[in-house]
Length: 394
Image 1 (cartoon, rainbow, N blue to C red):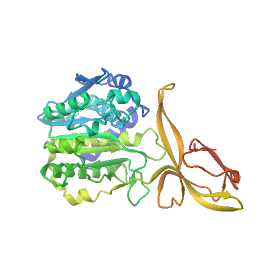
Image 2 (tube, rainbow, N blue to C red):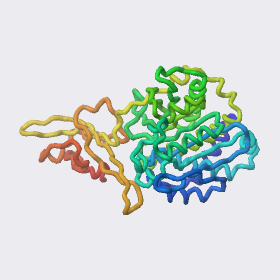
Image 3 (cartoon, helix red, strand yellow):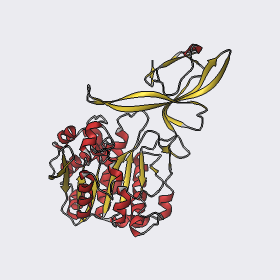
Image 4 (cartoon, helix red, strand yellow):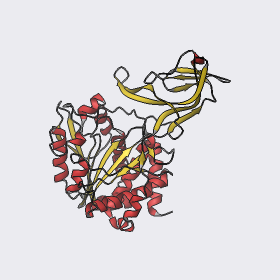
């Protein structure tokens, strides 16, 4: 085992012992409470439209810098939790020789919640109803102007743009969920690979290698369509290699702990690489291209081989069920409504959970399934299958 491997394995052991349970809905007040555990210098660099603090945490004293931001979309908190994990780990291990050496060589600036008003609502958009990731040019929202100003002033040689992605994504041609996805954004409409973007590709190729060590299928990759008003594209155009990391779903993991853990490991490795980036020279464009593309044909639940009766006839079809998430203010936690999203031949689509109905009859033939209805029903067969809000009831 290499020194790098043992360091990451030890970090993972620490994570399993110290990471606390969380809910995917993380408000600004909850974020502030989380970060009170972290003894790292921060400053209030601005405020949101509704007056909530936007914080920047700084650590390390070296000349080589990275800038990281999360919860640009208020409903994408997985990496925010991972940033807490990272800072707590660094604080508790700062005296170890390898980490002390890293912190002498580098500095990082982390903005853990760019869009606190969106976080309050569990919304992608700001209080002005602007998508901040499509506001990198106009900078209409104060939050996006602040973020761009901090990026430009950071002196960073690499940027990490941290997001969550929907449950629909899986690795193309497989039934493996895209728990992590990467992208080296295009800096121009021709999608050219200039030196800056090439560095992003090398970074991602290395992080894919690390991902595979801890999650065997590895990460997926987004296609490189050019979005002229997006942050990744515009930061790349500034000459700062930009790495998009998207956190996704894993089977049986509604709060995305697997993605949180992988973010934590990837960020530790990123600090190590930043302190000594010669490892990036080992990769080629072919390594980046070899990362499988994402596909978007994954259901939360798929029920195969369901008998649907009508008149004096019947068919056998599959049911695809999607979870639509929303914040529940009475509990302060995220809730969902399971919806029947498709009926038919779904054999070329995958799911986080699959059930074989073995030709059990939908509602005993007393009614037809309807698209967009709540996914609560019973399938009658040798063994009845009861589904309540998209969950199998024993």
